[in-house]
View 1 (cartoon, rainbow, N blue to C red):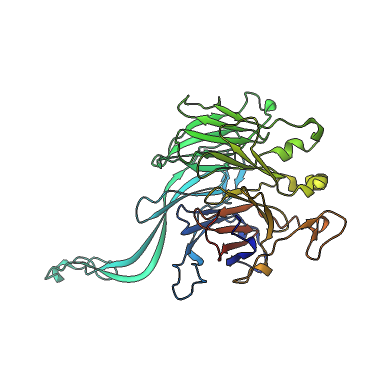
View 2 (cartoon, rainbow, N blue to C red):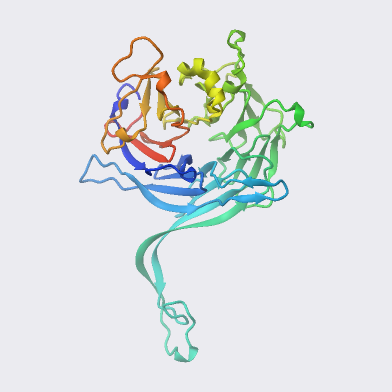
Length: 447
C-alpha cells in the first residue's frame, strides 16, 4: 500500500469454503503466530483450525508458500451454568499465540468464560524394540525375555498432536472479550465487560484482579470495557478501551489495582454532531498497539483512529471507514448492525492499517501517502492468481461502471475479523464461514 505497492496486485492464496452456512461454521477470530508460519482461526462451534505455510518453491517463483490445514481440534464445548441458569456458548472469542520457547507451539483460546492453553507438537518417529512390551504395547511374559536390546526410533508419518496444558476457569462473571499475552512471556490478562484479570501461565486456580469498574449499584453503570491489550515491549503497561470511546493506559508499577489510569485518551465530542446514536457509534470495538509500541489503533463503528501515546487530547489520524452509512444509522440500529464489533490490524511496519466493512468489503489506509482503498473478499476474487480490483460505494448522482450503490450493500456479509502477517504482505480475512488469504506477489515488502 506504499508508493511501490499497488493493491490490485494482492493475490488470493487460500479459501476455506462451504456451500451452505451453518452457525457453527462462522469464523469468530483469526490470528497469525509471531513468525507468520502458522495461522489459527476459531469458530462459533468451538473449533480451532490451524493453517501452516508451505515452504517456498524454488521451481515455482509464483508460489511463495500457500497455507494449508495443519491441525483441527475442538477447543470448547457448550456448557450450562446451573447456578445462574445460563447456557455458556462454545464460540471461540479470541486466540492468542505464545512466543515459541521450544519445538512445540502454544496458544491460548477463550470462549465467554474459560481460557485454555494448548500445546501443538509434531511427532514423526516412534520407539520400537522394547524389552518388556510387545509391538502393541502389552507386557511380555518375562520368561520369554532371553536377551536385552536397545530400543530404536523409527520414522513414521508426521502426526500433529494438540493437547490441553492448562484450563483457566472461574475467573470471570461476565463475558470475556479480550486476552493478551504479556511481553514477559510469563503472564497474560483477560478482560470482560467490567473487570480485567492478570494470570500466570503456570497457575490456573487464581488470578489477580487489576481493573474493576463495577459500581456498587449496577444502576449507576455508565460504560463497559470493550477491549484490552498489553504493550508489546513494556510488561508493566496495558491499555483498555470503553463503550464511551475512551482509552485508559495503566501502569502496574503504580498500584496493584489499576482503577486509576495514568493516561486517559479521549476525543472531545463535537456538540453539532450530537445525536441519539453518538454514544453507540463512538464505542471502541478493537484496540491494537503498533509493533513499535509508540501508537495505538482503535476502531469504532464508522472510523479507525491512530493515537500517539504522548498525546492524550485527540487522535493524530482519523480514517473514515464507511462514512456513507452515517445517513443509514436509524435502519442499522433497527437491524442491530450498529452493534457489530469490527477489528483492525497494523501491517508489519506500522505504515498501513486494515479493517473490515459490510458487503464483504475491507479497507486499507496508507499512513504515509494518505491513499486508501476498498477491496472485496468474494468468490469472484477467490481464484488463484486473481487480481483484486478496488471497489467504490456511490451515495447518489452519477455512477461509474463498477460502482455499488449504498442501498445495494448486503449488511449480512460483514468482515469483522482480520489479521496481518507480522512481517510480510499477507492478510487473512474472515468472511462469515470463509477464510480468504491474500498476498502481494509483486512487492512482498510493505512500505
